[in-house]
Length: 85
View (cartoon, helix red, strand yellow):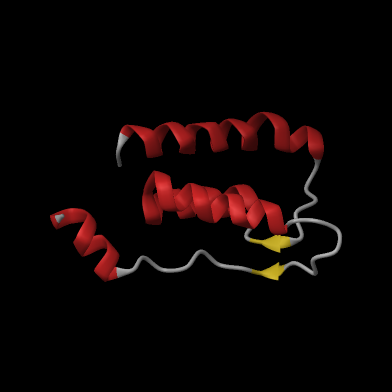
């Protein structure tokens, strides 16, 4: 895991430990938005993981029904391009 991904995951974890208990569990999605962000960063890295997490947070509002919304699997072709090019 690169330093950027590690730093972003650390920030999300700090939110989970400090802010989330104060705000209460009100996420309308499963997994919660912070758990989604942690997984997206782990699976997709800092850039794509951050984009996926931001898109998820922007969908989290009273007019969205929520529901089950898993992190998409890693794209092997994208991973191949990242590793070799």
